[in-house]
Amino acid sequence: MPELPEVETTVRLIRPDTEGRRIVSAQVGWLRTLGGASVRSFRKAVIGARIERVWRRAKYIVFDLQGDDGPSGALLVHLRMSGRLVVEAEGTSGGPYARVSLGLDDDRVLHFLDVRKFGRFVYVADADTALAALGPEPLGATFTAVRFHAALRARRGAIKPLLLNQAFLAGLGNIYVDESLFRARIHPLRSANTLSRRTTAALHTAIQQVLKAALVKEGSSFDTFYRTPEGQPGSYQDQFQVYGRQGKACRRCEGTVRRLVVGQRGTHVCLRCQRPPRTS
DNA sequence: AGCTACTCCTGGTAGC
DNA sequence: TGCTACCAGGAGTAGC
Image (tube, rainbow, N blue to C red; front, side, top):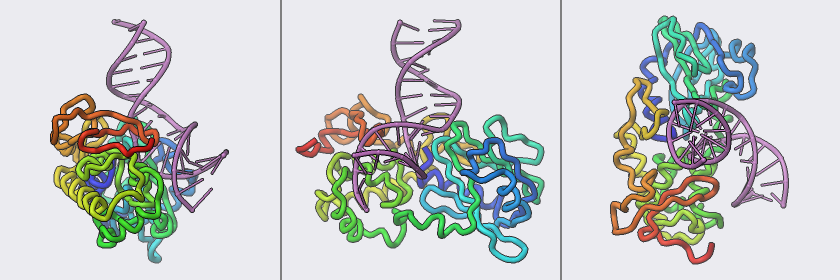
């Protein structure tokens, strides 16, 4: 499932092929991918625009667009479960899962491939406004252990769903939350406001270490979905401590990794390393 | 307001 | 073997 490391990897690899290119055509294979816009309005907004810059915010890939008369909005791409961006030679269809295809002025095509159709490829007039509700970047300068602790103290719900809340902290998904909580030895059902300053600091460190390590490995690929734009799988799945390892031995103690459901999400823990809270 | 449950989708897989 | 039923899950939304 593309999370921050997978999205960042996608941006880094897609950037050289798309930055500076002009969009010359647009095909839409699945209407809902546009997030409510009509094909007509989408085409009007993007055809003729130049891709000025490609960057990432949370799990969004942002293509800043430049018209002939100055800035003219942005494309926000969210890979969700199974989305991929690839650049191929002109004339390639992208296959049956191509939901949006943009022709570029170098005779290549940017395809948005998405088996499960959860992904979004949306034009917005202003990227900053569209992304304003997102929480801090976990690898950004504003995300400090002190601020993290203050924010957690105001929340009474379980820590795991909170870490998945993109308005609270932007970029984590199910995999890296489970891995981070294991590293910090925190049970996913612990109430956020019960974490001590020390434990919060451990979680802050764990989140950053897990994300940085996954970035080095170009993300995680454990099913048929995530591939880099070059078609390569990531390799961080080899370093998973708990995710998908239910029934297997904990890599730190003599315990066994268990699978729970927390907030409708598959959740992986070692109950010896991550002691359950007394209540619930 | 915060929190939970439900929805969107389809390929893969477990079970019969 | 071939069929059906169920599962995974990010984020938007509805409801309490």
